[in-house]
Length: 331
Image 1 (tube, helix red, strand yellow):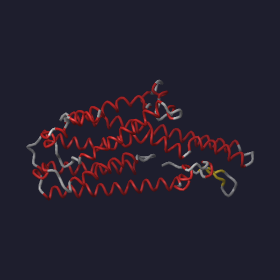
Image 2 (image 1 turned 120 degrees about the vertical axis):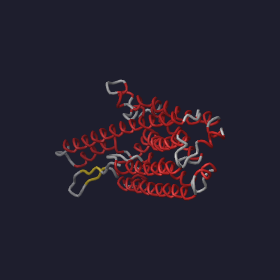
Image 3 (image 1 turned 90 degrees about the vertical axis):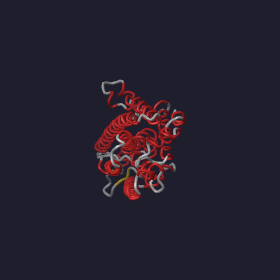
Image 4 (image 1 turned 30 degrees about the vertical axis):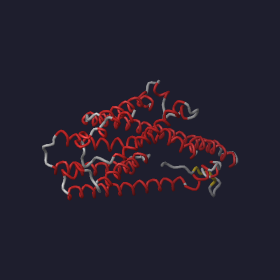
């Protein structure tokens, strides 16, 4: 579908390609992220239909879709995500920029709903797991410590298995995070493209200000995604924003001919500096956030679990007083 849309779209029409060049237009290879996004969506579809464990996950939500709470089901939102994504691509490649902006904005809202619902469901699952652990420990106060350890290990392993969490994240959460971050960048791009193509009589300084404000807006969005949203941090969304901004910074180092013709060297350089700074800051924030999460989960234990070591070797331990310590934390 994507290849068919691209074949006769903007990249195959020289006039449209020249017309829709703006300071926010990334190089064509940046759009290659769609391949990764669609592959991840393929994993989601496979996991939600064929995987014996993941298809029953609350992060898919078939049961919720058939209940009185369909808004809390990812499966209920998924058709809208697919429809708006394909509509965005076809509108873009057909030269209907305003429609592409509206469809991309709609897609961003649907993806935000999916990510929000998944976060709420995961919080509820963790709260239930903690409650189960506390219940096991209290019930075992009169028994020996080994009985308490075994009961708590079972409760933690149902939820705290790092290997299972990684598979769950890649198949059920990463597709929406990576997609959401990139579609957010496309909303900014289409907004700039729409202004540039519809109000071409405005001075170039106006487009310059809007482009740089959009870059700062994406940087702020990345900061909120990685640091300020309570609970879980959206690493996939941060990574796709970094990818888009990095492509922009590289593109503005050797801009296309339409950009050279319209903007002065100082205007191009200013935007390139803003894009480079935004990319660097967001990349550092993403790296720090990932490292911080890996430290919290203990990277050595994670490596051992992926190597086949038993989870309860590191997840549950006895403290100095003989009590039980469950070493899992929020990402």
